Length: 218
Length: 209
Image 1 (cartoon, rainbow over the protein chains, first blue to last red):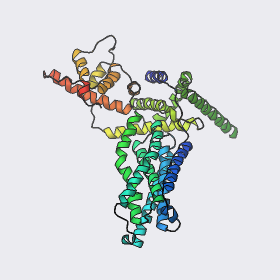
Image 2: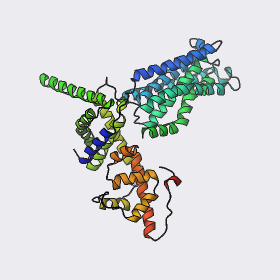
Image 3: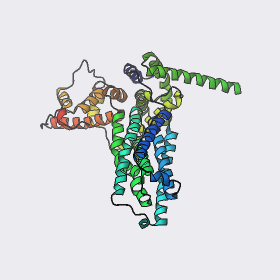
Image 4: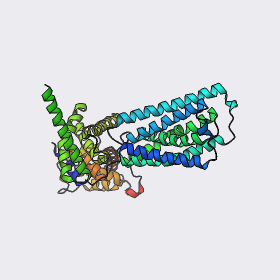
């Protein structure tokens, strides 16, 4: 063993402080699910009627985009949490693949719906797109906080990848709540103000968030 | 032979259990268990690194960075999971970081005169021989982070990983600071040798890197 390695081991031992092990991945996942379900419950309860939730079975485009968004949000959440733990690379990759597949499915469903029905067939009132987008962003803050708390306590090897999936996860979870509570079912509206939220958050936030994670890791 | 295989598996499981036990004790702050663990895994870490990196100096650096990552990421180890795959993942990430950094730097970074100075002064003892006045003044003019990195690596003779632990930054960040420090020192010393005057900028005047 080299002298420098011995010296480093001495330094590491001197620097040792008790740490609390990171929670289990499934526990962290359960916490995020509980937070999300509570938020969904509050939003649906506060509305007089939830057209979105009732339309799930009657509108195929709406159902497919919901399914895609759900797979994307929960896959990205799994990937983001796994990104904070060394050795969970497979889970991280699987989650990322699910997230991309979910976003793809939702986008294809919306585009297919737009082509089949025509954009003019399902007009959306002025300002509705922006309203849903903003609401989704607000609703994504709490899940983002929980995911980031886990990531910050963990040991992220790929900050950019982790930041990307964390943003898709939180944006997707927020958009899912809006999707289930929204009264506008037009495919263009679904694409522009529900599905675009995780993508926009990931594109705009990936760099600053990755830098933040990198800085915290130092 | 089936019995040999079974014996080998049993040994591996026992070693794995021992590592896991030491790590759990380390997470509670048991320094003796932690020392045992680090001493036991150090050859394994080195073997993994040497299988990917042939250059001895670079491999040593990566081994130290990997040990530092194991130290800083120890909270992510879960007792119910095997220790080996966790450790190998941390080491693998350190190796990937090394190749990434090498690729990023490429050949554009060249050896600097200040590094040559440091090499020539390897045998100098920081405690017994003071730095040359112009060098001490130039060091004093560096921003705090750069000065700390240069002093830890070149004056105190610490490895990058040791210096990173002391400065509480990642090895990569420390290398960047040190390299910027070398460049700034070179400029300051060249200006001094040329008889020109350089402005002594206090750390608080400059952007921290």
